[in-house]
Length: 287
Image (cartoon, rainbow, N blue to C red; front, side, top):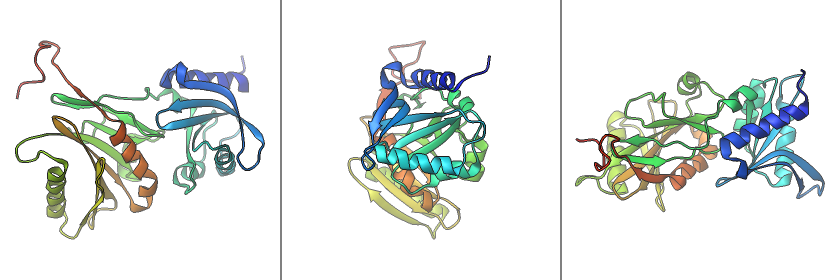
């Protein structure tokens, strides 16, 4: 039986319920534009701690193009919804994806095929190292991947939805990874760890520049490389027994849209403690 646009919208709604939980998802929501004063319908609206995200089901005979994204950025900006995802049955052009990701508007956009939406594995993960763990919610438009870390010391890697892991590492060069630092006598605070990282960066690239961007309630620092095409941004948050740090790599031109993503990961990380299954009284693996 041929699928109709209504069945396609049903499918998008059901996938959003699977990912976010049915209690957070509404469908066929009507909002009145701030400027136009015209009511517009949102196919699916998801309420998250990061704000509302609109999902727009596009059941087209052709792929989504730049004009579609441009018009939707205008529409959702007028409705006061600053995050939306286009879910398309026919795919999308590379130009449409670039416009969604690289636009300088206040509206954040993303484009997914239905297959990509179905591969989204829920809205949080629990990276860990040794006895320490966090519950981590990826920022809008990103996924958290605990299986494909490029280095064994990375507890998890985060990158944009709808992009291949190898393409993200070697072509897009826009991703983040999570690590843990156990507090000890030498490095016990965020300033201690920041200085440690500064020294490591300068030793590797003497011409690079270290800059502290934010210090409260968490810290963010930047290292501008002379020997790499991307810069490193270090985000730190202190917990009782460890310091969480998230390293985000991207070009300087992409930092504007990624600053809030790094902040979001730091702000919403919930600490935990890992216990061995074979010995629940033990707080973690033996050293």
